[in-house]
Image: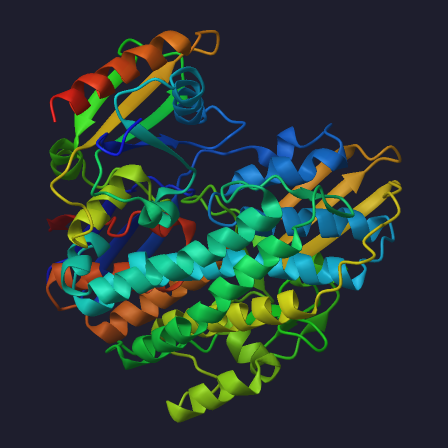
Length: 429
Length: 148
């Protein structure tokens, strides 16, 4: 059998720029590299010397899809170092803020990026002609997520409403009531979305590598908690670097991460598997009707997990708006002190871990940001190697390409920004 | 203004407090400085087209103004009609679904009518005042509306 080299020179226009090189020899994968050659963005460097008060607005610029995640990991890191105890109203409003991001991001991924794969379309614009109701549902849900972010963050793109110790301005009761009305109306649509996702014909590829997420007592993890794994790990955020190792690989400017030498999975499927008990009983009931059980190791069910979390985020947003008490919202100013500030939250794509070294005046001396996409890289490569082998390497190249793209998109990495980004050059020896 | 006057949409696109706010600023400038028009202008400000275009009534002529502060302003105003937007741009966006992709998607969903949809793409330098460009765009909108 001849050797096949599949080179994907550019994964276009992404927060991480990348490519995929695949070499097949004698019917097996000789090498596979998910190459990320994104130019260094140097955020960790240019944060140095800036005051911690500036962090929320600076780190929000790192990502257009999950700016809230960056803001939350940053402010929680600094607030923890300052021994700031978040009052209940602030815990709830930040959770609501984050729910908005989950709703927006998950809806965008399901409808605009992933669903065309499962329905046989090359992009959502073609899909919309035959499935307008599904696309319109997605747009409606996504807009609600944006409305939540705008209500708390002053604008939906790179919000500016967050500050250390709270928000610059709290939402009016009228704006919360408006949100509540939209959320209540959208819950049936999210339930229909979950049913729709489960009904789609999905490939099956199981990965049993460790899953990792936060775990928060009494609530589905979003903004706080310990780091846990499917292998029994349970550590405080401060111990992250003792257990997780980042290493440079030649073909990527993003660092690979391993847990005890193994790739690991972050994101919705990992979160649902590890925190299923924290989902409300009404979601359990819906999933039981469809025979959905955990742990679910089918990587193509990441889309279903997103639909579960989207529905959860709407229920949680409704609960928060109905119960949050904003009658006493005064908090003491943050008193900065020197030390190491660590924060970690659940971005839509998984753990987003931050560490800052701060001087006594609150200026940043060092910053380290570990985003979920880089942590998932090694898992993506592992899945591609084993998944494509199981799929069949003798299949037509276009089918291998499509399957590889779909597998990569299961993770919703930032490098999947362009919905169908693989341009293949195939060489036969 | 009378009941017989047509109504149009003037849509400023961009994110405030950023290099991307030019479209917002120009639409706002037109709104502030031009009240005696031969049509009723509905001013709309959009920072996330994929989430906000659903609220726009495309039965009316709709003029998008999107801009960027840049050092490359050799061609400060580019005017595109809907057919150009739909047919001439492919795969230029990424994770973020921008204005053009949103219009393409809305076209696929059948939500854009045969009415006028125009996009003005603006590039100006930091120090460049926007009033002149705003007046140029307004004049073009006036001409387009008067032509029906």
